Image (cartoon, rainbow, N blue to C red; front, side):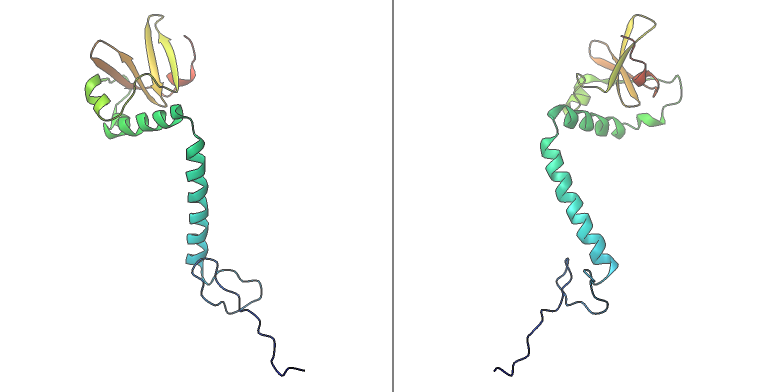
Length: 139
């Protein structure tokens, strides 16, 4: 018969691997480790999700980021801003991808990327803010 006592593995923090003290069933040494662990899990999940996103969704997200750089959300109701197509294109904006479109006044086609709406001219895009236009769906 052996005199050795069985060594029980001390529980360790799932994030930093420190030995845990305190109540049974504890899995993190502190709130920071718990938050960092869960944040890492979510970021891995998001990375997987982003791999499966179609390129259309990625392009729309990029369009939105580009338009936010222009502070278009500061436009007042009825105010418009003209931006050259090639300037936006250089930043990665692709005017073919949008979240909605509507005919305004029965003649002008306005495309939207969420609340940012634009109509196309030869070399220019004319922008305005109209969250309702994106949801009208009257082509």
